[in-house]
Length: 164
Image (cartoon, rainbow, N blue to C red; front, side):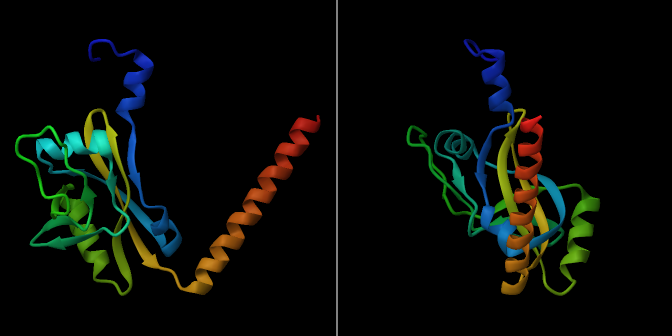
């Protein structure tokens, strides 16, 4: 723990979300999830901690046996002497077997590798990737209906429990 930090503050920092891509959960049916590390420069890490990031328009791709994050925006850190390009393509770190599994699944029709969440885990920046199939507007309506039914069931269960 750093000087002056309480244990609670250190725990919050250890697993802090920086950015989420909620739209991806609406637009894609996520079949498989992966946790990837990011290759970042120092000012990018400071920028993530201070200003956060945007992964809404980002996607991941496999090129030459490596996975790359394209279109993510990480704000610059003003006090840094040498800044960084906020929209540069960044290398993702996955195990070789995971890269091969992703590459073979991406060949399937309609599958995409989308970033779901950017967060810090024990001081290191991580990206949760989802291997997903794009939803049609009919599928989106069906997913919304299922979610609303699930919410209503949870509310009813909570109401019964509190009535006891």
